[in-house]
Length: 158
Image (tube, rainbow, N blue to C red; front, side, top):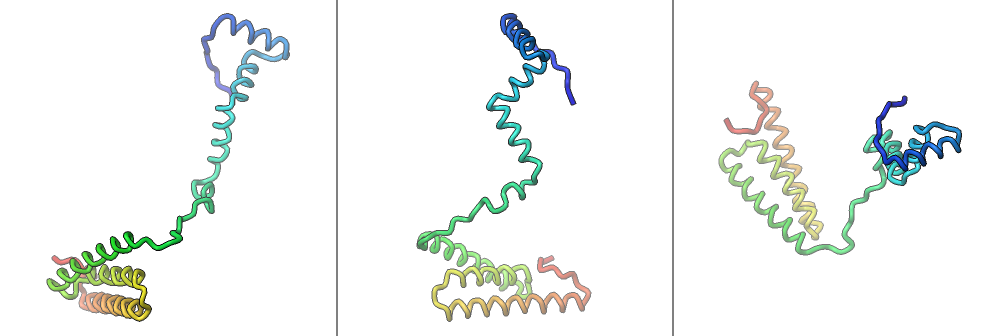
């Protein structure tokens, strides 16, 4: 599909383009179009447009990699432990207010699992994971009990 376009250019350049069109036995429009297509910026743009036929996922699949640290970062581990501990304290406060608060139990479950990933001792890691699984089972049991009683299965206090 072609579009009509009005262009204003220098008179000397217009004469050169007309002579070039005569030499090539083509139109002025064709000369200008060929010239624009051969410009490096235009070629780059056309390549990008061809690539855009693919979805973002198709374009980038397999090209990005997560950087895995080759050595452990003790500062990062300490920061993780600090925030896990702060989260655990907040969950304990919430559970003191209401021990069947399923949102708090679920979040504590996730924090215990995160804490287990930082733990180097296998026995402690397994104990944390077991405690997390017990909390998960407790949440499931609470949700079933609420559902049977006709209550909303939410953990939020009302």
